[in-house]
Image 1 (tube, rainbow over the protein chains, first blue to last red):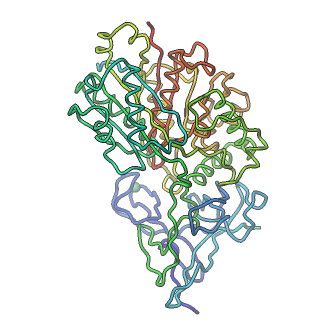
Image 2 (image 1 turned 180 degrees about the vertical axis):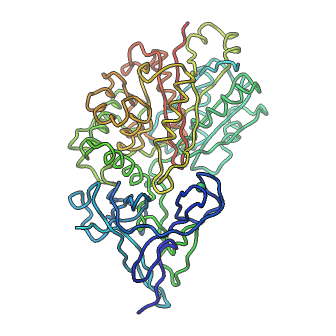
Length: 131
Length: 399
Ligand SMILES: [Zn+2]
């Protein structure tokens, strides 16, 4: 199997791909980027926590017009994963309002975006409908 | 107790395409017109605050070099789409601090033909994947981890409201846009002044569902400028100047406080609600007292949520409020009688002063065909994503 690298560092690959967050030890606020401090309580201690992989579509937009090089259409979405909000594309379903609906149940899924010259596969995440 | 603040002179240029003018031409035109409107000259001005978001910086000094170099302090400000409101507020703060008694605020932008704003162009997938940035991403996030472009972000903001309270649809958002395009037919300074049918709006090019092209703010060129004065100084000016002066009953700027999800999808709601609450307190008026509102309809999906955020309707009631006809120019709370950003246009740094010009125009009874009769109190709102929110409440002179 080819060597793989996650598209973003908060995606953990393996048998059960999932997202991880930096959770503030003081107040529990969760962040998906490298932190200097907590935006909520200003604390500086964080722990890594696993994020649920099943959730609900809280908002979306079907983007049909984007910057050069961005493949359209794609479905941008905000998903509630067990109380933690995450941004990602809705995948594995047609990008239209008949197939993508508010409140729809979704789960995390991964796919290979591309392969670099050394044969390493970049793996991204998205959310697919739970039928 | 700080002195009260008044708009003495204010003006916007025609919004649209100005291929023969550069940003300094447009800014100078607005600034000189605002000074003339107030019956003063650069000699009277004690502070200049200026913004030009997409330009190279130093717009304030460039304006001075064309219209008057008097050695006064210049503040070049940038605050996304709230840049104009921030310039105005900077001038107001200088007066409130007692540093001077009159100030000039200018916002200008050249955007005609600019296309899509924000969202990085993607470099080709690299020869070697290397994580970089705060998310350790091996390539840009836009398009592959949701969207970073404005039409999609604000589409999600409107859709989120729909998920929370129900009642939204593609057609509902399109009808909000229909209202603003209809309003624009009465505004000679708007970039686009054609009414559009619901079928035309819904059938136009889809940019980011549910926002089609006419439901997005129009990129265009334009400038706006305002002269602000202390109440004490105003009382030394002519009766005519005092009669046309418009009182700044509230001037508020907020940023977005931390909440769950706010770093995932920008929360434009709480900071607007906070700004509005403070503004109503400062002015001693409530939403029911407003004769007209200019709010930041950068997209049709955004206008809906701000009905609620500015407390023009009960919480969760924005859809019913719009359906009641309240926000049409014939309704109880006319919203965006200028045509809004969707048709008047959105030259970014000019917007936060141009919306105040619109309100002043009505309060002075000078709005011609689109005059809201008997207007005494108005509210102007802008949002800069990131985020910054400016809210100003303006009142007609009692003289
Ligand atoms: Zn914290």
